[in-house]
Length: 252
Picture 1 (cartoon, rainbow, N blue to C red):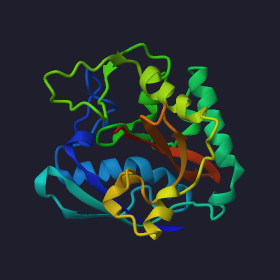
Picture 2: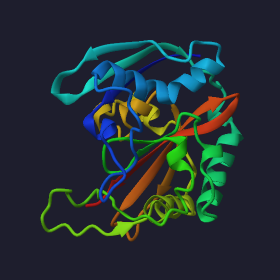
Picture 3: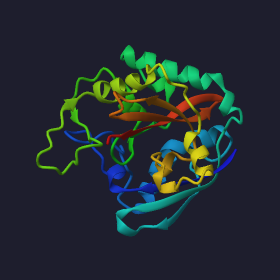
């Protein structure tokens, strides 16, 4: 299946580091040039799928803008293995159940996600977790001060709690997953775009919009708040795998 994927690569992805307030990391970037960084980040997610489809391991990169500290990189015609039956593929729902079970058991996420890693979008720019970083992440007792959708990071009055990955990300996903009203709609934002919803309203970052997605929603508590996890999916060796988790919440 032919795709054109555009990435907006900013400092939050390139320089993210595991520490008191950061999530994920970009790993070992070969050198400091914009071209090298863009090739590395893009190839990290896409090269495995492209090579499985018989293409070279590095997708073609076209750098189109490097203004404002960001690099726009486009992978042109990456021949990724896809499945036209995503909308009815029951294995995608099964994958959600496997994810929930793995989180509850504090197990290994790697068999469920892309061989190129996992993008996590949680109240901040996308952070890329490599397979090595995912190993043991649910059982890791290290705590982080995670970004909030209601409190600004630079608010001097902010006292954000410290939580582990499993406590902050895992428990949030499970709360949504176990909502009895969940219907797990697929490609929800593509449907909304067809209805005239502006593209800038889409909470799924541009890095992940070309992938199919399935939504896991919590309807809120007494109408005060609702939130959704958008699980981005691609196929590797014909099997659905998770390439991204995007959190989106609303609070009045």
